[in-house]
Image (cartoon, rainbow, N blue to C red; front, side, top):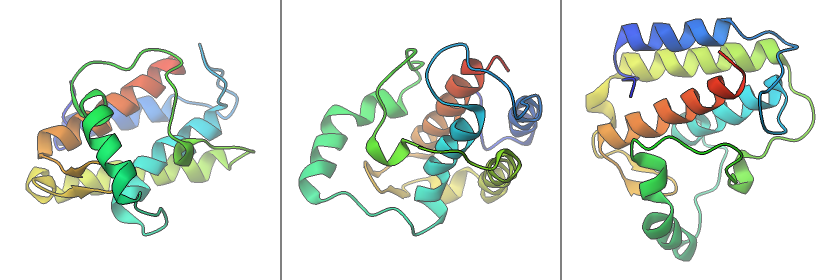
Length: 150
């Protein structure tokens, strides 16, 4: 598992992003490359931007006990896994804007560092360790970069 808090690992992730082209085609799934980048940005928006509502207490309980482990452990996501509604991107997005946003979020996370994420609360899962934050970010990016062959 890559470490999103290490500069060299972030540089490798950014290198993979830079291999994407606006006409890159997925090896599986339905998202276009611009939608995939926007989709990956949602994870970071939930940390840095106040644009996604916090799930109600009942839904957070369900997410914490039935979904959290699959999201924060090191087990890779299977192809064509179902996604949460707030991660579904419809319509076209600006490839270059979404690409730059994702690179910016990756850099910001690395610069803030591991200690900034230790015990930080997730909208959906409650407090997470920095290792759980790392796993969630890194495996999600790896899954979608592999989806587009980079």
